[in-house]
Image (cartoon, rainbow, N blue to C red):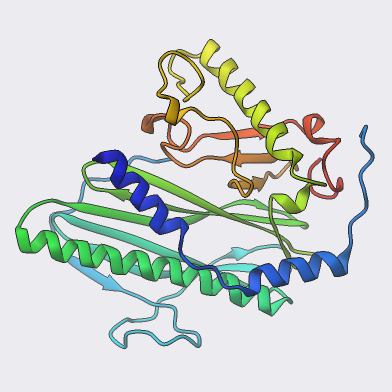
Length: 299
C-alpha cells in the first residue's frame, strides 16, 4: 500500500504539464548558438514537529496570471545571481494547524534576455506549486471530515550552482503522511547563451545512458563494500527483481556542479531504501570525455 502511494505521489508531481515553449526554445537556441565538437581523447532534512497553534497565511504570485482574489501577494528577494539573472522567492502558501502543515515556496527566475524561456520556467514553477497546494487542501478536507490522519507538504528550492556561466536550481517536494517521500527536479541554465540545458543536449548520442549507468552501478558497489550503512537496489540475492537499478532514464535528474562536474540525482526510494534520502553521483569527466558533445560545460 505504501509503495502504491509513493508511486502515485511521484507520478502526479512528475506529470505536471510543462509549457511546449520550452522544447522549442531549447532547440532553437542550441541551433543558433552552435557547439564545438570535443576531441575524443580529451534529503531530506529532518522536519520540525507540527505546531499546535493555528496560523494560515496565503500568498500568491500574480504577474499576469488569474488567481484567487483571497490570496495575498508576498515577495522576498534572494541575492542576485550573476550580473543579470536573479531569483525571487514567492511564498506561495503556508498552512499551520495541529495535524496539517504546509510550506510551499516558488522560485521565480528574472533577468533572462530570453523572455520566452523565462516566462515558460516561471509558469511551470507556478503550476507545480499551485497544483501541490490544491492537492494538499483537498486531502486535508477529507481527513478533517473523517476526523483522522495528519499530513505535511514542504516545497522549496536550492541553488546548486551559480557562476558566470551556469545557474543550476533544484526544486524539491517532500510529502509526509504515514511515511515521507521526497522528489527533486532540476533546471540548468546557460546564462550567457540564455538556454535551458537538458541531459541529452550534452552528449553526441544516446550512448551516455549506458556509460553513466555503468559508472553509477560501479560507484554503488564500491560504497556498499566500504560502508555498511549504504544500501542500493543492485542485482543481488536481497533485492527484488522489479526494484533492481539497471540504467538511468534518458532525461534523468542532473545538475552541473560549481566545479563543472556532471551530477546525477535520484529521488527517494528510486534506487535505494528511503533512509538513503535522495542519492547523488558525481560522474568522472574522463568517463564522459569520448561522448560529450563539447567541453563547454563539463570540465
